[in-house]
Length: 413
Image (cartoon, rainbow, N blue to C red; front, side, top):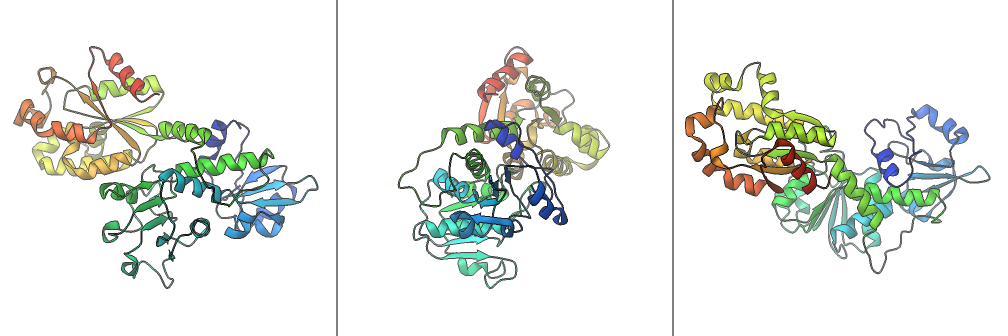
């Protein structure tokens, strides 16, 4: 239950956990009380903005719900009363364990002061973190005086800044945090937010919120089934990854990730991409086609009338929009690697595949840069970029379908 659930991943998560009857209930604020009293449910998840709203209607609260001050899981007991729990605590603990970060004694800052921030603060406190500072827009510790907390070792983003569709935004710039040892973002769409990509570029261990989403959902399902009495908020002496959480998270990640084809002009990205989309049931997008649509003219005309720099600007703009999508196949232009910012855009939701082909098999027909510079010159300029950008290199096989199948197999789709 929530107010707006159009982009909820919960049904998909619960289906993979074995519950295909999980439904979404959008309710306006004035409908919540009646729904809680008369709704025909035995168990329900609660999300924004009702995690605090439902608390007064609960006859009993778990330790986790009391500690955090919000409820995300409700059980209607046999006597008709409601029991309120909070599985976000378990979910965030799983995220910390997955990242293998020891927060004990370390200074942490939490970006945002909403319900998720309360969960994070409770977990960090329970794990013996040192100074835990909540950064808000108007409090004593805010984004205007963030520099006084540059000694923070743990940074957790609980704000929606950087969440789809505003993938290009970031809550803060990490460059001033020289002591930072871990960055956690509870956002899960995109898979890698802008702040996480910056953390990676700085060599800081980081993780997004997808594991938390799945972990809290699994714990909620266990509560629904009566398998656990309540969400356990005690720190475990040892930890091992939960195979169900790992399996479901990896499957969702595979489904969410865009498959992005990079490589030399004429290597077959479009034809292979179309075939791969057909084989996997995904939507297909060709960046060059989108550029033509945006500009209202051919790529050759853009180069002749405005030059390569203008073309690259349009290319990046097209990339920003297409990369916000999930679970697609994207064929890029050969020069996409000439701008480092394009890599960061693509990596938010994509796995990059370098489609390599022998130079003598590359055609330059209708390709302005290839015609002006020559294929061999371009290949020597870009080869190291393709190799450093990609997650996998796939050599073009004799047939388009064979190459597409090879990509599908390496990605385990």
